[in-house]
Amino acid sequence: DADVTQTPRNRITKTGKRIMLECSQTKGHDRMYWYRQDPGLGLRLIYYSFDVKDINKGEISDGYSVSRQAQAKFSLSLESAIPNQTALYFCATSDATSGRVLYNEQFFGPGTRLTVL
Amino acid sequence: AQSVTQLGSHVSVSEGALVLLRCNYSSSVPPYLFWYVQYPNQGLQLLLKYTSAATLVKGINGFEAEFKKSETSFHLTKPSAHMSDAAEYFCAVSGKKSGYSTLTFGKGTMLLVSP
Image 1 (spheres, rainbow over the protein chains, first blue to last red):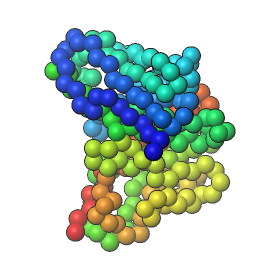
Image 2 (cartoon, each protein chain N blue to C red):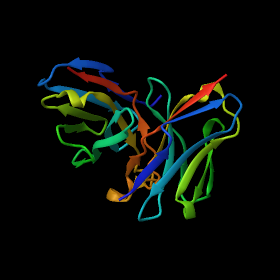
Image 3 (cartoon, rainbow over the protein chains, first blue to last red):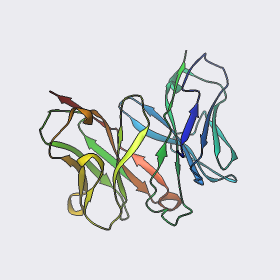
């Protein structure tokens, strides 16, 4: 099945460490997104990318950076992790090539649970 | 800017009872609206979406939602709850920024189903 995968699924790290979360998809979608989920706050958009050369900041990009290495890969980095970045992180994809961009159905990966001590 | 408000962080129902999860939106342009479900330890899955074709939208697992422009609402309902419906539900609106290609989510409503 075409899918969205995230690695690692769980990660515990220490304050100040650099960490990278990876997302890969086999759906052939051009658009990819990174969200964080915190209890009681829902999902908030960190970064999104419409293709390899198009990266955009979302609602809460401070402290994060991203890299779109290929159409199928979109990585999220925390250059110097801090405890309030402890959260559940989701990658998502959507397909604009079919002409249905306005419907923007997004497909989510299983998430990465990150704990910063 | 668009926003979504979900009334009630937790909703409890008995198995077989009506499920009603409330969502109100704010948008300066005609919105596209979505309901997603998140089962424990999983990612989000689309339940249904409103794309202006019909105000009553039917989704998976017996859920439906009605778009009411006058009330700026998009409430999710299911006539009879099942234990397997226990999950967290998120309402989302598609943003005008970047051509409606971003979503703004509500804070979520946890649905608890008791036997």
